[in-house]
Length: 353
Ligand code: 9Z3
Image (cartoon, rainbow, N blue to C red; front, top):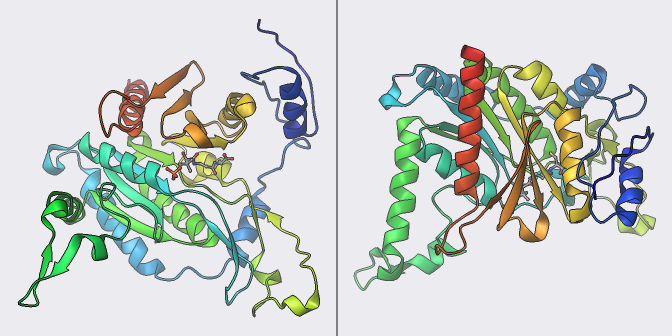
């Protein structure tokens, strides 16, 4: 039976946990945003995050590559592709604990979701800015073994390097499709490691894509840290264990989703992900994110079943998207991207009308 309970709470997370222990599933929760109720994303917090962040290396090259990418993809006539562009974020951000970093806090994400989705977006005619964590999964490489260099190649008698017959097809596909997409200018890959780099580059991307208006999608599959050590209060050198137990206060990362949605790229189609391990609170948390950050879509997934199914939450619907379990090698990202493309097309059409 469905029951609607209306309440006002200071701590939404605690209240949700309380209800979910009594009722099996909390499907949705209406949140009234009070200035003093939720963590604010004040402009000052954002400004101070960026001002105190270490300078981003290679800004000029990133800006140049973004400009070239946008110039190339802004016109609808490029290789007959519509001028649809998606920024896919992928992998987890790190939070360094020392400036000369030996230790860091990490966020879980293999990068599979982002890499696979990138392939499907390219296939249906979108151009992709792939903002990914260094060392995580790459588009077109999902079938390669963990260590492709050592597992796919052999040195022949005449000292030439050869691809083993067993892996020849997948290696050929990874190289040709990846190089073709990059050379055509429809795939731009930008790497990050830390939360500072991730947000700095995301800002550069969103400002560059702003002129594309509703044609741009933000598909934010990266697992982003909620807490960080501000650069100015961070130890320069490795923290010493001789000083006893470590007592460290982490600051909250400003809620950049609001800033991205409202200021950096207000016309774009925004999709964020909600990851939980407790399925009883997943949908309610996704609903909250949808309303709080005014997302067009929140994709809810549970850690253990994330490769099998996701639930797409929008203002009007909740759609469960499943992997086709009959077809070998089928991925949930294929039907997911199809649904995203369908809803994005409707969004563009509505705004054009
Ligand atoms: C996701 O939920 C992604 O689907 C996964 C994909 C990280 C689970 P893999 O990379 O896994 O294929 O191994 N991403 C967003 C996770 C996240 O940090 N979301 C925040 C939250 O849940 C909002 S930005 O609070």
